[in-house]
Image (cartoon, rainbow, N blue to C red):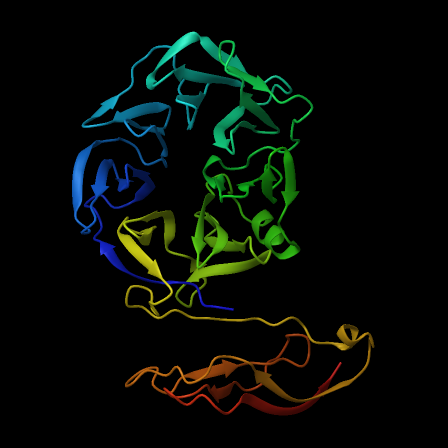
Length: 399
């Protein structure tokens, strides 16, 4: 197990603060921060590009020539300048996606709209259609792996670009997915899978027309206890060859990380108080992993070589499974625990100061978590001291 990345400042916060979303357009990073669209340059400076009113998150798409931004039912277009799309055929969309030279928007009810080829600002009235299998509301259009997914409140319909008809899309017959999307901002994909928070508050992995519940009991319990979940924010990233899906709940103040590689969930927190992690947006650009700070919109570089959170301490905590006789196939048996040894890389202490003699703190409970023993402080090796064991002698018995 490796620690999660630390952060360092890449671009200072914009004057208006709150992050509303990242997008990479022509290998450059763009951010809607407060009511402003800004380009975050490679040297960390910012360029003001115009005004996008509101506070809601934004959804982006581009074709290499134009970048479109959808938020609050309004569409904005940017190439060399920012403008508002005014075509009267648009039906106040909340999402946008792109496939085969056409932009696809959600419309009213279960309808979706397909733009003219090469022009995301224009819709012909004949290129408006509706999800067909169920009358639930269409929340989001999303393209992945050459499929157009019409993601509704109760169902998901996969469509494909047939190249004929108006619009030139056809439904994949007998492939309707009986799951809705619980937050339009939770949807994201790796190279292999699409992920989303479902309307039933489980987290799903989607490939082609096959959907898999990747939640576990612990994650499901935490999410269902939240008062609001439709503001969930998701993104994916690849770190050292491993794919991850990150899911944060702003109102619920929780964030979780799923490793696609090992099929495991982790809790992501900020500092030692258990608040959700800082990340609210992510992009890999300029050869760096960059995230937006949820508190003020500043841009931070994320790296495993950084051991703090922009100068603040990161707490790493590993909670082991409950040890009992059932694990040894001898339930209700009293066990004797003579010691506990932590297998870890040793000798990583810093040259001077805090961290020069790193300590691992271990707590143990022998009555099911009701009371806890005195904390054991175990030395894990000054710099270059690679031998020895990280071990606590306990000499305790328990059921």
